[in-house]
Length: 150
Image 1 (cartoon, rainbow, N blue to C red):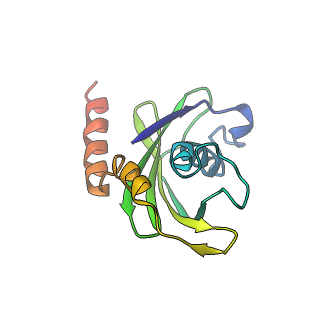
Image 2 (cartoon, helix red, strand yellow):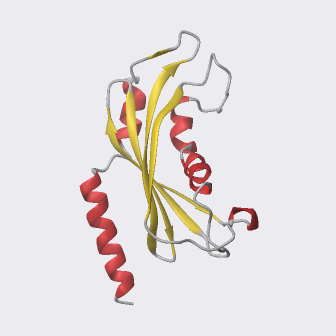
């Protein structure tokens, strides 16, 4: 799992004083940087060197998030295929999960416009951060139960 902390900015807030739901796509992209670096260590965005393309993303907004309280982003690898992998993203604020979602990312050759197999060396790195969704859900439930008992 990777953890990233963001502090909501004034511009991230909507008219109801909540973190706007459009902000999560940007935050979760930021949280993917450690994964991006596995494939392109210097984050060179040239067509010749960038190797990933996102083909799907989804979000479940579970609770409202607010200004002036840090948000912890958690990123897990939940599936590794031949040319793609699936990430689970979560946004936590004040010890509670507020948003969860998934992103499917493909190892991609932009010059030839085709997917390519994930190299074994990177597959090994991804596997180090892999956790089945059932285990993530179980762990989250335990963590929130501890918060409820405080």
